[in-house]
Image 1 (cartoon, each protein chain N blue to C red):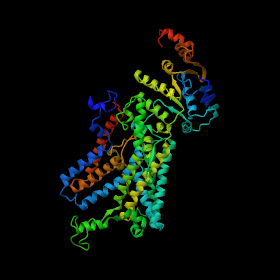
Image 2: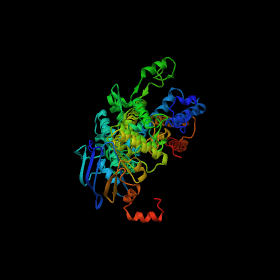
Image 3: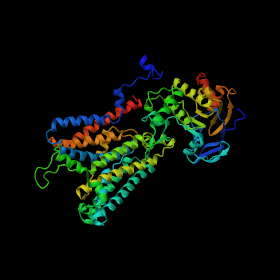
Image 4: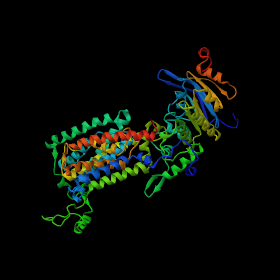
Length: 373
Length: 262
């Protein structure tokens, strides 16, 4: 056998793995296939509906970016072996805190944002400390915080402002340096140029005639891409990333070789809270208001995106890129159904089906990696 | 043992109480560099508790631990590891979902600078892992092969190689062969032999007399929290060891009823 001779003169029972099988055990595979399928389907059924012109692309990009921001946090946390069900409530809570600090207390917006980040990450750390100290499943601990935070989010604005939606943040945020980092747009010049060059659509009449329909990339999308890149980098290229895998793979084995498992898990809870707060801040800056019902069910959508992206619910295995693709699939389908004139409640049916499909596929892949039968 | 060697670990009259339960009632042991010291005993004899005091998991209630002649206080396993005492646990050695090289360097990740960042040096990790595995006689398909695809014996070997690579002077193996097949057991025993010849002290916990006699230099039997003495290789027969482990008489009766096959 000349082709195997240059390899190790090894165990004849180790079969050479095919490239297909190798590709199959990459966690991103499901996400990549799903993305291709989704784009092909909508190109066929909604290709002429405006879904793929500049405005349409921006539309589903924003929705996908929202999913991506929370999926990155949920992904790293799930790989570290824990869940956070309080993400959705955290989004509502963070938005409401920014609104109360800014509108009721009259703080400058940048100060409100910074204090809110500190507060929410502290709550994330509390989640983590309780889970690590008590050894309880994070499912139960964060379920408690789902209710606690949501309760405060509804109670506080009623107590203080006698309403459940606090508006007027957009006025306060004008000219604020930190608010622009969450609510602004970049590359306006490029889009103006693209519009003038006739590459993208421009308004044909009205007082903005001649200006491009899409006048820049919202910071929300920038945040999503930065967080995905950051998460992927940390997970695959750093020592800490190895600790994340180890903590979720087998916490006791990791402890025995000196991995600070508790610290890793608490930090991941804090990072999840950070992502939720980024989501909330972008949303508040976009709408100019905070509502008590914001972020409802987001925790589950984040988890579904992560699972579609190939992560195992049991921890120790997954990919940030996969989670980001899961979020993209989400956004494209949710908005695509609208473009294709399909009843939007069917989106939930789709969610359930694809979740089931992804979990079955992941279980099969895990068996393949670990050699279980 | 070789008189020019001083013992690397001396455990003196170690006692360990858990509430009202006396798990260890004064166990003494000396371990020399380059020897394979077998710790035998039936289930519940206190083997696990004893090695856990040695590796810093438990603090002894009474008694003294001397490491390289100096009294040692290990507050947690990390202290013991940095002193050079590495423990390989039977089923907690490796993480199946992670690659061999990620497992090998878990907790000791090599880093290289990349601008302002410190990166996990995958090239170095992969190279060293392949090299160390080859030395131990394991041919990997690649360093990114998941540990889950290795056999139980290979996993133990990877864990041993890892401990040796990171400078273990004392290697504690907690029942490394108890869940393995014949061939895999032979591989692990061969690995133990290789490691011992490099001058590393091996503490080999087992309740299988034949495995112990295959590689052991000295044998200490624990029974009900006490040592029943230490024997040199050649001074004791397998039957005597077996009897000591089981606590004597009942075993004789049992064995005759089973036709002497145990």
